[in-house]
Amino acid sequence: MGRTPPPCAVGLDFGTASCRAVIVEMATGRQLATAVADYPHGVIDRELPGGGTLGVDWALQHPTDYLTALTAAVTEARREAGAAADTIAGIGIDFTASTVLPIDSEGQALCLRPEFAGRPHAWVKLWKHHAAQPQADRINEVTTARGERFLDDYGGRTSSEWLVAKALQILDEDPEIFESAAGIVEAADWTTSQLTGTLVRNACGAGYKGLWSRAHGFPPAEFFEALDPRMRDFVRDKLPGEIVAPGQVVGGLTEAWASRLELEAGTPVAAPIIDAHAGVLGATVVTPGRMVIVLGTSTCHMLLADRHAPVEGVAGIVRDGIVEGLYGYEAGQAAVGDIFGWFAGLVGSPASDSASTFARLETAAAATGPGGNGLVALDWWNGNRSVLANADLSGLIIGLSLQTTAGELYRSLIEATGFGTRRILDAFEAEQIPVTELVATGGLAERSPLLLRIYADITQRPIRLAASPNASALGAAILGALAAGAERGGHGSLEAAVEQMAGLATETIEPDGEAARQYEALYKEYLELHDHFGRGGSAVMSRLRRLRR
Image 1 (tube, rainbow, N blue to C red):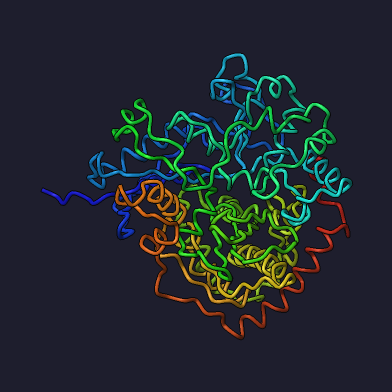
Image 2: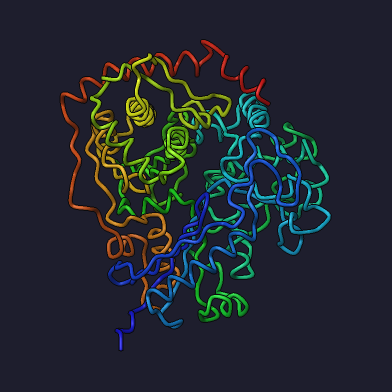
């Protein structure tokens, strides 16, 4: 007979396309099993499941996909681990954000009601839904005119990706949906409520994506009224539930969900956390100065610091947002892996799979030295999240010739995303917030040694790799262990859980001095283009996007 596992935590990592479940021993961090289940409907960006065309920059999801995928992933992971129900002592969740949906008074998604199924605004708006940019622009104008205090917590601008812009878009374009909603909530909190029967709002999502701070709460009613008189009581009427720190117990698995997952009823479920922020914990970072870069379809840059500073273009500065007692800074790039995937799809052969296409491109790109392709690109295929916070911007490649190869183009795209990260680091340095080391995690970090090499040379900083290939899921499991508590074999503090359950790979990627010097010159070219197209030198990108719409 096999060994019975000691007490374990389940980490559920809800990404853009799938849910990953990991089962982790809480005493050692040993990962016993992992399983991934895709969302049946994927990203809904062209038409609704029942018909109905969507506009440009829309990105929706089907809420029941989260429940279907988590069931499949947990079932498969438990089967692989051979973990009995009574060995699972806690469940933690991380989620994309701001991914939001309107719900009714029973806590169910409005889009699941027949009368609203054909209404796009009744569905989940995925984090990369950018059709709320006009509303984000309005929020920024009103915020600036009123001199709202909270703007300093968000680098001077709010984003179309966040909850308030998406809620305002619902009100502008389908006021019946807005009025019918008993709440507009993060999908993370909705999913947790399905498992436990209790709806709360996680402090991470509320702080980074909902304009809330522990010290000051939400913006005043007068601010929301200035956006639209119908929003005056937005906080009271549309944001239900107590705000709870990640890792605190929301409740136990309901009888129905315990039966569905074949786990014990009452198993503690932790308040969720944003996926990138969970990766900070899974990458061992609980102290200032070490930036975690979560490299996936997009990239998030997470940094802990002991003080607040108005860093340009950050997506949020939240005290206790990740680790108690420290300010958690979030910045990011709206497309990274998505850019590489786009290019691979253009040049890939129908007869070859995507893995072989990426391998071929990486080999060809590695044969081209820094700047040797004579190309420089702006990494704005999905708009700019930091530091410009403008979803109307778009991608650009300069230096193309009849001799340009696919490998050279691919390297220029990797370099462009590296320059985007460097620009974010510069914003922190300008405010005397030190970044001494990068810790990389996510799918791209695991699959592309070339990318890590280029990033080290461009940023001129050493890069460590998280030991777990699933750092966000591990971070969620760490929160599950915190919810379990010492009495169930878990941990009594976040620091203790991270120390016992997370680790780093042994290799350190050090910058190459000569390559760094070459990239320094190319980075200046990137900055010239960045400021020209991003700071008012030319609005051609916005004009072209309007023509596309």
